[in-house]
Image 1 (tube, chains in turn blue, purple):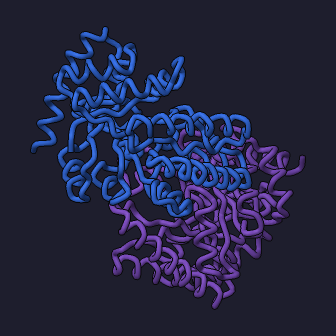
Image 2 (cartoon, chains in turn brown, blue):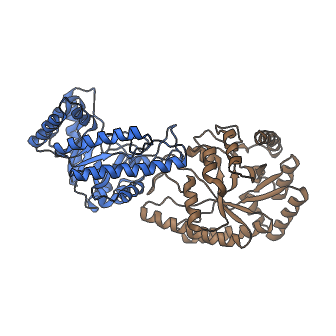
Length: 285
Length: 284
């Protein structure tokens, strides 16, 4: 497993600058963040921006195998107009990802927490339909979709199933993948989300099994989704990494740690040098 | 629908004292509390104790259709523990029938299995246990009601983290569908659904015609307080309307914590107020 960094850790920089800066301090692999993907899609000539980033990645000899597709996309929402708009945006991002040689796009399962069971079932239908549509579009371009695990709400959330959020458990992701039945859909395990949910990283990894195709590595105290660097929370990393090896995961060990942002870029990069050293040590044990 | 309260509501008065006080106040019925069921089962002559309670209920003209059965290890993978618990519930059902009780409430207990494989085994064992209880109940003219639970917020975790089986109504329907017995329905605990974030009205509709028992209690949506209606945040008007909408005609049974520690006359006054509020709620 190669340590990797999600590029929005330096969201102040352009995609090219972000990759160059992170590569300069030793990071060898990246997840292209939603923010940077949006910058590329919004460029005057998006294809040119995508090609430029691909060339830089190749020039630097680093890898960028995954991207976070539109984080705000809700492909299961009951708002038809919003859903179609989000699907179109995600499809466009998939096209750009394919152009950049990105193989996996991470996507959230979406949903509105409907008030009635009838609407809950309708939402499930929309989610399946959207993922089927997106998987075909991605498959035609050689891209796989990785549906990410969520976590249940703590309190105050209401709905037909109360505080429960679709995708907060790994079996729910498997159910979605089984129903869609496309070969290019797998799971992005966010180990921090699983930890808040109360599922140990090692158990979550084993539940994903061979469908694990992307990782969001982050730590927290088990109470809220803090997105901190590994070791700053209470996840059992040794057992979790051992489980990744046990299931034969060989993808990138991608840190998604916005909880470490907030400093000027040069200081963030200094901090990331230490995080890289720690991550390499964890993966070498 | 008619008014009722679980018999521990005047715990300090004992079972006979509670039932007599409730009847005198004007409660129409009740649920036999687990603590009282245990006392009857633990008597020197349980059958005679049960017959006495049955006679008392008849004398008072109370309608006591439901009982809270033991919190048995329905989904436990410990075969000996599960067998012991199920055998005890069977003995208790026989006693309940002697008292004229008709519906027994059971929790879908299954522990917190650490792996998905164990979680699935627990699910299968739970179905088998409920099937056995439903079959035993059917042989004795008795129904089983599975009660909704709540996801946890504590440190105890399963392979699905803080999720606890039975916290949402569709999971109860899954067990009932799998068992496929006519005498197997749902006990809706309105407080548990409120903590879970499900409105009472929606929960009632989700139960539909499988609703055969009620645990009516309120809270503030954060923890399971078992306080009387209107002291928490449940929308009682829409909840009771939903009960009428689905055609529920059973007991509106308050499973609320007793006002222990106060003088008995104060406890009685408190319960009279609770009854008046309940009658007002159901009479609207």
